[in-house]
Image 1 (cartoon, rainbow, N blue to C red):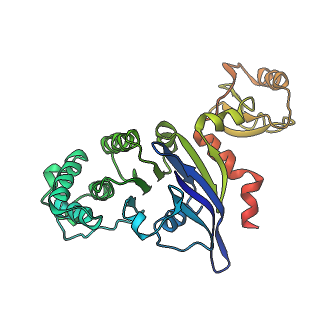
Image 2 (cartoon, helix red, strand yellow):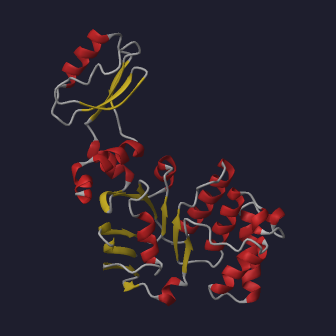
Image 3 (cartoon, rainbow, N blue to C red):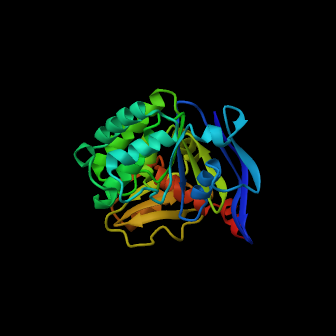
Length: 304
């Protein structure tokens, strides 16, 4: 079990993390979501020993992570940590050796991951001659090459084309099937929803929602109502009591009925507005859950 337990971190007067905690079971994938500046990268840097927390700790298999344990983690930072003049194959082999693999095993594993991530034809090229997307693939190969026991990846899908995304997604799912816990941060919430067993949403240094995607959706069940009135004027539902407009586009309106509004009263208003082509309770997407979580009052308290 990989455990992030009560992490606090401040830089001067700026509170970056406020009691962040979550667990990732072996053989599961955890999607770490949050806006820019929410604290995701700081959390991952603490796990890798690049920053010290003010309080709290990160544990693997019940013991605090130390330097020896971190050599068994495949880590990918948000910023590229590659040597631009080094050739692709040599680069990945070098990172394998840093993790303790002998020369033969490192070369073999390097060749495997370079090929799997679509870089076989560029094995002898210097990293600086690659596109940004292919440099991202090299960094991913460097994180995976040492057969890690844990994967911690900061925005691993950033800059990848759809083929690269599919290739990496399959590689991560394969790691999960072998029992490796995987944590990755991403702004691509549709991808997080598709791949992850559980999700954590961070806002202003606090975990404002966590759980499996189905669990999070069940918490919002019976609240969101989608009403489609193609010819309706913008803002038609804004004055309805107990109703909040979540989104509105070209007559497609998503409403939050948390104020105890009567759905039949909403329907009657929609009918008076125009021809209703859809009226149904809506299971929220992860994008909508994210918006709700980061806008919640408890998410705002951290900034106070």
